[in-house]
Image (tube, rainbow, N blue to C red; front, side, top):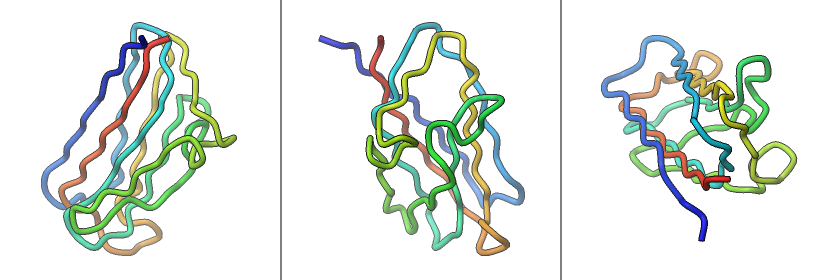
Length: 117
């Protein structure tokens, strides 16, 4: 049985600029699920990759509105497959807080689900 774990990120308030989150995991993982939303009607765009290829895993995609998450899975990821991420890779999560000058995202919530290996 594979170990499954989640990474939850919540940023309260209305964003006034783009958001960048960067971190490393200590083991090889596979990204199998992403859920993202804001509490308001917004134009937020989510991109997930790694330093050097910011859109390697999930290219710019709209997040959910009104606390109703958009869920991304294998067919939404680049190449229509679960991304394999090697240990020590700097994961890069970027939220364009208002898309192309639209409504800023409020109370951003992101959940990433990984399997180990």
